[in-house]
Amino acid sequence: LQFLLSQIPNLVSQLKTVSYLVCDECDQMFEQQLQPQINDIIQHTTQPQIILCSATLPKQLSEFSSAKLKQPRMIQNETETFPLELFIQNILVSGTYKEAALVHLCQQIKERTLVFVA
Image (tube, rainbow, N blue to C red):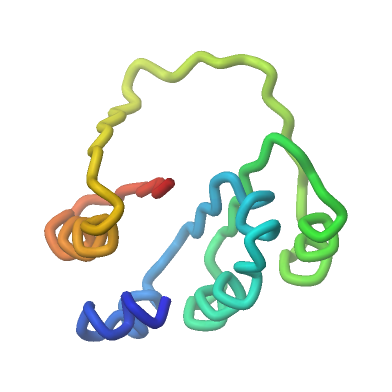
C-alpha cells in the first residue's frame, strides 16, 4: 500500500470510492502476515462490500472475518464454470515490473474492473 500511495496521486481519495474490495487467495495473504496492510486498505475505504476468496478457511482468516466484516456470509461453490458475459484478460509481467504495471493499469482503466494480482 505504501508503494501505491507514493506512486498514485490521490490514491487515498480514490480508495474512498471503492464499492467492492475483493481479496483473492486471502488465506495466503494471512500466511504472509499481510493482515496489517489489508487493514490499512480497509481503513481508507468507505464501507465497501468486502469479498474474501479462499480455498481454505484458516482460524486467523475466520477471526478476521468475524472482527472486520459486517454480517459475514460464507458461500461455497463447487463448480468451475464462468458466465458467458464475463470478460477475463490475463497479463503476464515480470516480477520487477509488477507494481509499475499495476499502477499503470489503475490509471488507465476507467470501467468497473476487478484486478487479481498474484
